[in-house]
Amino acid sequence: MKFSCEKEVLLKSIEIVSKAIAPNNPVDILKGMKIEVSDNIKLTGSDGNISIESVFDADIEEGGTLIVDSRIFYDIIRNIPDGKVKLYTSENNEIKIICENTMFNILYLSSEGYPEISKVEESNNIRIYSKNFKDIIKNTLFAVSDDESKPILMGICFEINKSNMKAVAIDRTRLALRNQIIPETSLSDFRFVVPGKVLSDVLKILKDDSTIVDIFIDESSVMFKYDSFTIVSRLLQGEFIDYNRLIPPEPSITAQINVKAFREMIERASIIINYDDPKIPVVLKLKNSEITVECISKFGNFCEKIDVDKYGEDLRIGVNSRLILNALKCIEDEYASFEFTNMRGPFVIKPLEGDSYLYMVLPMELKN
Image (cartoon, rainbow, N blue to C red):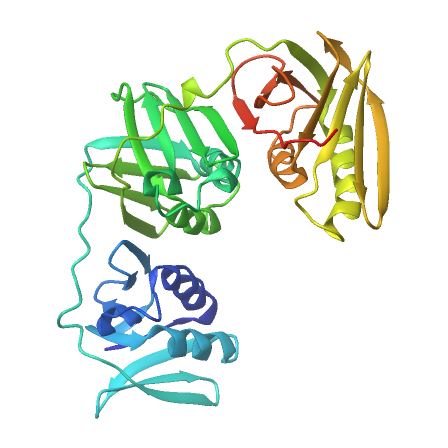
């Protein structure tokens, strides 16, 4: 094996591929990164559940395949000088890494026994712009459950119906839902659940641009192809919760609230809470044409109000500041509709028009 390339190109690929490698993996060979040199360079990392490949061009003199320790390889490439880096194998199972006057020799392993990455057949195909897919993930991922007793909820459920993609995440205290128009597909009422950890890695790769992300799904796996990267992951198996049953059908109280102003009020209230106990509820009071945000802690108290358009009776309800802020930070609309049933029931945040998003949060019990 012998090739040379720009450090920046190599480092970017190593950083992405390393996300699929678990240093404490019980399978020794999976602790390493696979380097394949032929017509181009392919780096592969896998932990058995998720695999990431990166392909890029280089000046190739001799092909070959081997495994290197991913952590050592990353640290070396990250710290060598910028510019052209040359890599080639030598005797004693060593690979030389040279950049300007810097040279490293590190041991490598044979690639024999490294598992082949099972690619997903390119039949059930979804296409979406990178920016749109990034927004969908970012605006639902925070609501993925961490409860290992219900593994199906540790992912985002995607529902595809022709030209609509719906993404849903839910845990014990909240629900996040986003709708996105996509290019027409042949899929109707098609559902699959991708682990949140995998989507967190995908999110770090995607850019805010119009590059196409191709998604391929079969019964057990999903494959994302984006730019020079391919990510293959197992799907979560099981029946995703019927979330529609959890959403209150008819609110008794609605309020149209300025999202930015309301978010900033909650953030200011959080200052008092975070120095005491984040579990202290923020109290929302809807009365007449105002909403008041209050909280009390051992360090002090907070109170602020703004005008709103309210319909229905007055209400006093407690919320977890972090839960509601997670939702509010995802909303770009100037105003949103807040729908309540009573002080003990979940409340919903929707757009004033359309159905591009829905966030639901369970309230906290308030002491009289």
